[in-house]
Amino acid sequence: MPRFDIIGQLGSLRRYARSLTRDSSDAEDLVHDALVRAYERRATFRSSGNLRAWLLSIVHNTFIDKMRSRKSEAARLEQAGYLAEGSTPPPQEHSVRLAQVREAFFSLPEEQRSALHLVAIEGLSYQQAADASSVPLGTLMSRIGRARAALREMEDAAPSKTKNHLRIVGGP
Image (cartoon, rainbow, N blue to C red; front, side):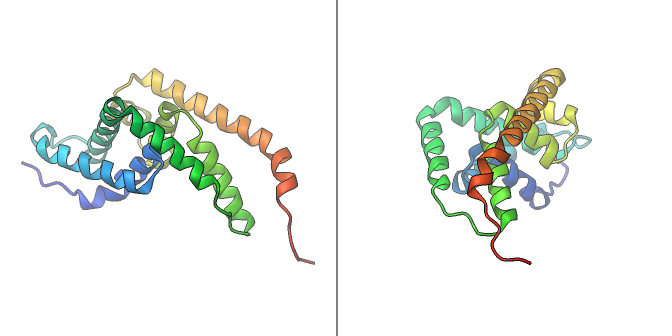
């Protein structure tokens, strides 16, 4: 039985879970549940396989299972996203921009957000991300393409919206 380096994978698992759930507390619960599931099914891991991709796949499948069994939880998570919008953004321009990018990313449909996260943030290959999501490679590529197009559309629409809200204070 190969020895798992679970500790080394926690950062990736937490980032991906946060991307899926949009809530830090729920993300920690998801990672915990996925690690329990991984431990229970550790015999199914092939020693020649990619541990991170296998664990990310378990996180993904655990999330999907929870979504199917608790639709009311999904509504609660969506409401939590609206509460976050009510906070006052920091005055630094880069912090405001980061919040805008984050909001745009979280507004993507779950399938697109998940696919883009696995490839762009976790650095998985398209094939590894497709395997982790349990979808064909073409489907994953299509989801990533639609996600990027949606983000470009949001970016094109953003300057007119942000012009009136952002103001540089001070300076020469």
